Length: 156
Image (cartoon, rainbow, N blue to C red; front, side, top):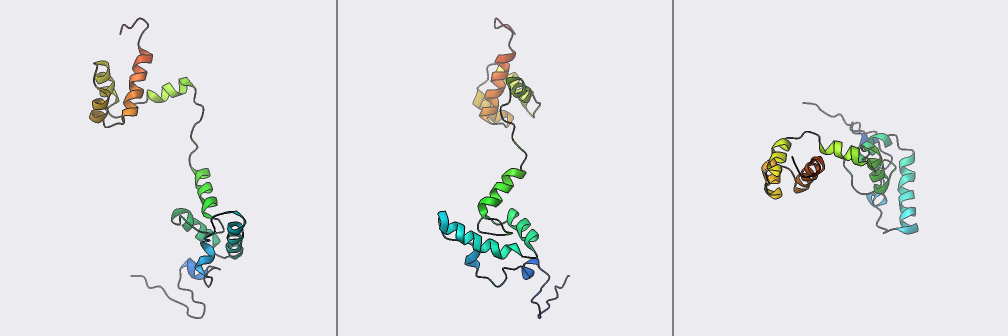
């Protein structure tokens, strides 16, 4: 069992929050109620000024990125943290050409072969989706791939 020693002179109980510059501030400072415009900008700027010289700003921001959906923390507003989260996600491919999209459609997946066989035999798309454990949209893509692969003249 770990015991956290608390230094009463500094109020330091071993947690980064106990060393935060905002420790004695009013919590409302970091959760502005203004809906937008200059009033919100002023309120956010006031909170960010406190964050500027904070010795645990990095820890606070890391925590806020994972846990805090609202307010100012680590020197960033909720909108700035959301933007940072979006920027660090794996980027989606945009503007895929038909060849790349078709290559993606041909990737092996559990149940794909069985689903293609059921579709080729005239199976109901909704039932194929249920049987294969995939979405109806996936089955529609499989069906489109079957049509695209069919030889000219309809013979298979």
